[in-house]
Length: 264
Image 1 (cartoon, rainbow, N blue to C red):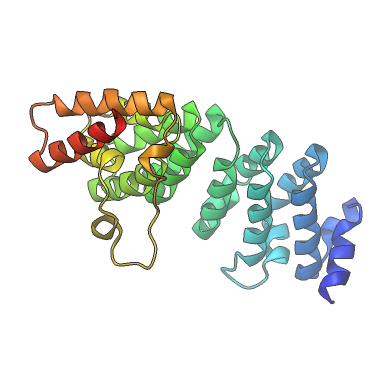
Image 2 (cartoon, rainbow, N blue to C red):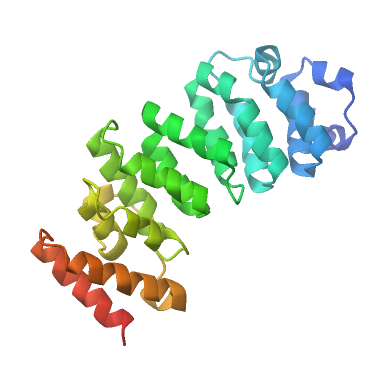
Protein backbone atom coordinates (compact mmCIF):
# COMPACT_ATOMS: atom_id res chain seq x y z
CA UNK A 1 0.00 0.00 0.00
CA UNK A 2 1.28 3.49 -0.86
CA UNK A 3 2.12 5.94 1.91
CA UNK A 4 -0.95 8.09 1.16
CA UNK A 5 -3.17 5.04 1.58
CA UNK A 6 -1.53 4.19 4.88
CA UNK A 7 -2.01 7.71 6.17
CA UNK A 8 -5.65 7.63 5.18
CA UNK A 9 -6.08 4.35 7.02
CA UNK A 10 -4.25 5.73 10.06
CA UNK A 11 -6.52 8.73 10.17
CA UNK A 12 -9.64 6.60 10.46
CA UNK A 13 -11.22 5.98 13.83
CA UNK A 14 -10.02 2.74 15.40
CA UNK A 15 -12.42 0.08 16.53
CA UNK A 16 -11.78 -3.17 18.34
CA UNK A 17 -11.38 -5.05 15.05
CA UNK A 18 -8.65 -2.69 13.84
CA UNK A 19 -6.32 -3.81 16.62
CA UNK A 20 -6.56 -7.33 15.20
CA UNK A 21 -5.00 -6.24 11.91
CA UNK A 22 -2.46 -8.78 10.62
CA UNK A 23 -0.62 -6.51 8.19
CA UNK A 24 2.26 -4.93 10.16
CA UNK A 25 2.35 -1.81 7.97
CA UNK A 26 -1.35 -1.13 8.51
CA UNK A 27 -1.07 -1.85 12.21
CA UNK A 28 1.94 0.40 12.58
CA UNK A 29 0.25 3.27 10.73
CA UNK A 30 -2.85 2.97 12.90
CA UNK A 31 -0.87 2.83 16.16
CA UNK A 32 1.29 5.81 15.16
CA UNK A 33 -1.87 7.77 14.34
CA UNK A 34 -3.27 7.12 17.82
CA UNK A 35 0.04 8.19 19.38
CA UNK A 36 0.02 11.36 17.30
CA UNK A 37 -3.62 12.25 18.07
CA UNK A 38 -2.99 12.06 21.81
CA UNK A 39 -6.55 11.24 22.93
CA UNK A 40 -6.39 9.80 26.44
CA UNK A 41 -8.95 7.03 25.90
CA UNK A 42 -7.35 5.85 22.66
CA UNK A 43 -3.90 6.00 24.25
CA UNK A 44 -5.10 3.83 27.13
CA UNK A 45 -6.24 1.21 24.62
CA UNK A 46 -2.97 1.54 22.73
CA UNK A 47 -1.14 0.87 25.98
CA UNK A 48 -3.18 -2.28 26.55
CA UNK A 49 -2.35 -3.48 23.07
CA UNK A 50 1.36 -2.69 23.38
CA UNK A 51 1.50 -4.71 26.59
CA UNK A 52 0.43 -7.79 24.61
CA UNK A 53 3.09 -9.96 23.02
CA UNK A 54 0.56 -11.07 20.42
CA UNK A 55 0.08 -7.46 19.30
CA UNK A 56 3.82 -6.86 19.30
CA UNK A 57 4.46 -9.95 17.16
CA UNK A 58 2.02 -8.57 14.60
CA UNK A 59 3.55 -5.11 14.83
CA UNK A 60 7.13 -6.44 14.42
CA UNK A 61 6.95 -9.94 12.87
CA UNK A 62 10.71 -10.34 12.36
CA UNK A 63 12.41 -11.89 15.42
CA UNK A 64 14.10 -9.24 17.54
CA UNK A 65 12.74 -6.36 15.45
CA UNK A 66 11.65 -3.15 17.20
CA UNK A 67 11.03 -1.07 14.08
CA UNK A 68 7.28 -0.72 14.50
CA UNK A 69 7.54 -0.46 18.26
CA UNK A 70 10.15 2.28 17.90
CA UNK A 71 7.99 4.23 15.45
CA UNK A 72 5.09 4.27 17.91
CA UNK A 73 7.21 5.39 20.87
CA UNK A 74 9.02 8.01 18.81
CA UNK A 75 5.61 9.50 18.11
CA UNK A 76 4.66 9.27 21.79
CA UNK A 77 7.87 11.12 22.70
CA UNK A 78 6.95 13.87 20.24
CA UNK A 79 3.55 14.34 21.94
CA UNK A 80 4.23 13.92 25.67
CA UNK A 81 1.39 13.89 28.20
CA UNK A 82 0.29 12.13 31.36
CA UNK A 83 -1.51 9.65 29.12
CA UNK A 84 1.65 8.84 27.12
CA UNK A 85 3.51 8.30 30.40
CA UNK A 86 0.88 5.75 31.37
CA UNK A 87 1.45 3.92 28.08
CA UNK A 88 5.18 3.77 28.81
CA UNK A 89 4.67 2.47 32.33
CA UNK A 90 2.19 -0.12 31.16
CA UNK A 91 4.63 -1.71 28.69
CA UNK A 92 7.50 -2.12 31.17
CA UNK A 93 6.94 -5.87 31.26
CA UNK A 94 7.27 -6.37 27.51
CA UNK A 95 10.29 -4.07 27.43
CA UNK A 96 12.01 -6.38 29.90
CA UNK A 97 11.30 -9.28 27.55
CA UNK A 98 13.24 -7.53 24.74
CA UNK A 99 15.71 -4.95 26.15
CA UNK A 100 16.06 -3.17 22.78
CA UNK A 101 12.59 -1.77 23.48
CA UNK A 102 13.79 0.07 26.58
CA UNK A 103 15.54 2.86 24.67
CA UNK A 104 12.24 3.86 23.06
CA UNK A 105 10.13 3.45 26.21
CA UNK A 106 12.53 5.42 28.40
CA UNK A 107 12.94 8.17 25.81
CA UNK A 108 9.18 8.68 25.56
CA UNK A 109 8.73 8.52 29.33
CA UNK A 110 11.47 11.11 29.93
CA UNK A 111 9.74 13.53 27.55
CA UNK A 112 6.87 13.93 30.04
CA UNK A 113 7.30 16.77 32.54
CA UNK A 114 7.04 16.83 35.46
CA UNK A 115 8.10 13.24 36.05
CA UNK A 116 5.84 11.10 38.19
CA UNK A 117 7.06 9.12 41.20
CA UNK A 118 6.35 5.83 39.39
CA UNK A 119 8.33 6.94 36.35
CA UNK A 120 11.27 8.02 38.53
CA UNK A 121 11.28 4.61 40.21
CA UNK A 122 11.38 2.91 36.82
CA UNK A 123 14.37 5.03 35.77
CA UNK A 124 16.23 4.10 38.94
CA UNK A 125 15.38 0.40 38.52
CA UNK A 126 16.47 0.22 34.88
CA UNK A 127 19.52 2.38 35.57
CA UNK A 128 20.69 -0.16 38.13
CA UNK A 129 20.07 -2.93 35.64
CA UNK A 130 22.45 -1.60 32.99
CA UNK A 131 20.80 1.52 31.56
CA UNK A 132 22.51 4.19 33.67
CA UNK A 133 24.30 5.70 30.63
CA UNK A 134 20.95 5.93 28.85
CA UNK A 135 18.93 7.14 31.81
CA UNK A 136 21.09 9.88 33.30
CA UNK A 137 21.08 12.07 30.14
CA UNK A 138 17.31 11.58 29.84
CA UNK A 139 16.77 12.54 33.47
CA UNK A 140 19.00 15.60 33.24
CA UNK A 141 17.19 16.73 30.09
CA UNK A 142 13.81 16.26 31.75
CA UNK A 143 14.96 18.56 34.56
CA UNK A 144 11.97 18.14 36.87
CA UNK A 145 12.70 17.53 40.55
CA UNK A 146 11.87 13.82 40.62
CA UNK A 147 13.93 13.24 37.49
CA UNK A 148 16.94 15.00 38.98
CA UNK A 149 16.57 13.13 42.27
CA UNK A 150 16.53 9.87 40.31
CA UNK A 151 19.67 11.00 38.49
CA UNK A 152 21.38 11.69 41.81
CA UNK A 153 20.37 8.28 43.15
CA UNK A 154 21.97 6.54 40.19
CA UNK A 155 25.15 8.62 40.10
CA UNK A 156 25.78 8.14 43.82
CA UNK A 157 24.89 4.43 43.87
CA UNK A 158 28.06 2.51 44.64
CA UNK A 159 26.31 -0.63 43.41
CA UNK A 160 26.42 0.73 39.86
CA UNK A 161 29.74 0.34 38.04
CA UNK A 162 31.85 3.47 38.59
CA UNK A 163 32.98 3.73 34.95
CA UNK A 164 29.36 3.73 33.83
CA UNK A 165 28.46 6.44 36.34
CA UNK A 166 31.37 8.61 35.18
CA UNK A 167 30.31 8.24 31.55
CA UNK A 168 26.69 8.93 32.49
CA UNK A 169 27.60 12.07 34.43
CA UNK A 170 29.54 13.51 31.50
CA UNK A 171 26.78 12.71 29.02
CA UNK A 172 24.00 13.92 31.28
CA UNK A 173 25.31 16.96 33.13
CA UNK A 174 27.64 18.57 30.58
CA UNK A 175 25.10 19.33 27.81
CA UNK A 176 22.37 20.20 30.33
CA UNK A 177 24.36 22.24 32.84
CA UNK A 178 22.46 25.47 32.17
CA UNK A 179 19.05 23.87 32.67
CA UNK A 180 17.27 25.09 35.82
CA UNK A 181 17.73 22.60 38.64
CA UNK A 182 20.77 20.78 37.25
CA UNK A 183 23.30 22.90 39.15
CA UNK A 184 21.41 22.38 42.41
CA UNK A 185 21.37 18.66 41.69
CA UNK A 186 25.15 18.72 41.27
CA UNK A 187 25.43 20.62 44.55
CA UNK A 188 23.65 17.78 46.33
CA UNK A 189 26.24 15.34 44.93
CA UNK A 190 29.34 17.17 46.18
CA UNK A 191 29.76 14.55 48.91
CA UNK A 192 29.58 11.58 46.54
CA UNK A 193 32.39 9.36 45.33
CA UNK A 194 32.37 10.78 41.79
CA UNK A 195 32.00 14.40 42.90
CA UNK A 196 34.89 15.59 40.75
CA UNK A 197 33.32 14.03 37.67
CA UNK A 198 30.12 15.88 38.57
CA UNK A 199 32.00 19.15 39.10
CA UNK A 200 34.02 18.88 35.89
CA UNK A 201 30.85 18.05 33.97
CA UNK A 202 29.37 21.25 35.36
CA UNK A 203 32.35 23.58 34.82
CA UNK A 204 34.90 22.02 32.47
CA UNK A 205 34.77 21.31 28.73
CA UNK A 206 36.80 18.33 27.47
CA UNK A 207 34.39 16.53 25.15
CA UNK A 208 37.04 14.83 23.01
CA UNK A 209 38.50 13.24 26.13
CA UNK A 210 35.11 12.35 27.59
CA UNK A 211 33.30 11.14 24.48
CA UNK A 212 36.08 10.04 22.14
CA UNK A 213 36.89 11.27 18.65
CA UNK A 214 33.50 11.88 17.11
CA UNK A 215 32.27 14.33 14.52
CA UNK A 216 29.92 15.94 17.05
CA UNK A 217 29.55 16.07 20.81
CA UNK A 218 26.70 16.89 23.16
CA UNK A 219 27.37 20.49 24.10
CA UNK A 220 25.87 23.11 26.42
CA UNK A 221 24.98 26.66 25.40
CA UNK A 222 27.55 29.38 26.25
CA UNK A 223 27.81 30.70 29.80
CA UNK A 224 26.27 33.96 28.60
CA UNK A 225 23.00 32.10 28.03
CA UNK A 226 22.60 31.25 31.73
CA UNK A 227 19.60 32.79 33.46
CA UNK A 228 20.21 34.93 36.53
CA UNK A 229 19.06 32.07 38.78
CA UNK A 230 21.29 29.50 37.08
CA UNK A 231 24.22 31.92 37.14
CA UNK A 232 23.78 32.47 40.89
CA UNK A 233 23.58 28.72 41.49
CA UNK A 234 26.72 28.08 39.44
CA UNK A 235 28.65 30.70 41.40
CA UNK A 236 27.50 29.23 44.70
CA UNK A 237 28.39 25.65 43.72
CA UNK A 238 31.69 26.71 42.21
CA UNK A 239 32.71 28.40 45.44
CA UNK A 240 31.64 25.38 47.48
CA UNK A 241 33.66 23.05 45.27
CA UNK A 242 36.63 25.43 45.35
CA UNK A 243 36.65 25.23 49.16
CA UNK A 244 36.82 21.43 49.33
CA UNK A 245 40.24 20.24 50.56
CA UNK A 246 40.86 17.55 47.92
CA UNK A 247 39.91 19.58 44.86
CA UNK A 248 42.24 18.66 41.94
CA UNK A 249 44.46 21.61 41.06
CA UNK A 250 43.52 21.73 37.36
CA UNK A 251 39.84 21.68 38.23
CA UNK A 252 40.34 24.56 40.64
CA UNK A 253 41.79 26.63 37.79
CA UNK A 254 38.86 25.74 35.56
CA UNK A 255 36.35 26.76 38.23
CA UNK A 256 38.18 30.06 38.82
CA UNK A 257 37.99 30.85 35.12
CA UNK A 258 34.27 30.13 34.93
CA UNK A 259 33.53 32.09 38.10
CA UNK A 260 35.45 35.03 36.70
CA UNK A 261 33.29 34.94 33.57
CA UNK A 262 30.04 34.52 35.49
CA UNK A 263 30.80 37.31 37.97
CA UNK A 264 31.61 39.96 35.37
